[in-house]
Length: 300
Image (cartoon, rainbow, N blue to C red; front, side, top):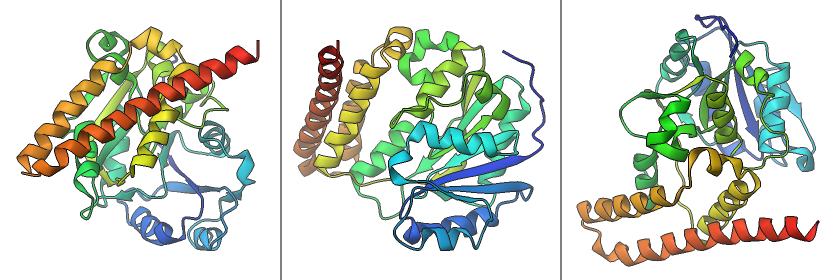
């Protein structure tokens, strides 16, 4: 682990986009209104077919358009990082929205601790979010901040490396030290980078008072494919499970939490649907792992 500056000098905000017209103006207005004024805004667009690029150019001259087939969650974020001037790189997704004008200031303030290499903020459900989407955010993003080191894997397992690039920040030289994000990852590039930063001796931080709105109401089909990608990712990067532990216990904790949430809301009729949804997730996860394993076996 290299020695880093303890004070934040300049921030680069990086937002990958694709057909983001319905989100972008509201998001970038909120970014522009942040208490942090000394930042650059970088938009990486994957050849949108709507007015995304034209909108983005109203806010920044740093808009790069890449062919859609060249996009990857890891590679595109790395490409932006290498052009960025900031010593702190803030990543957001197009469907996230800062909670208030202090969101970025609070997220980046944690880097005054020179051991912190990456941090992520709290994601709140949008006011109109359905119950399952509400619970998912409440489960993953609590109201207490914390920091994690590699040693914490004995207590928190795979969750030790948890990060979310929907609203996360990285110390640029630490990210460069571990070789940036893995280029070919289309899922989990944030956790993958977080795990490698922990192994390099850095600290990850969760900043609960740095908040954005970001949530989804997933259909059963979307849940299946989301967990299919998770299973594929865990099989592709199996060293994560070997290093930090398998996620099965976390899955059971989630199911119990969801049931308690629904009972508290007196939505008893949704308990059966909860079972179905979680069975679909498990099926997707196992199918993703198995299919990736078979695809690699057939290439030998």
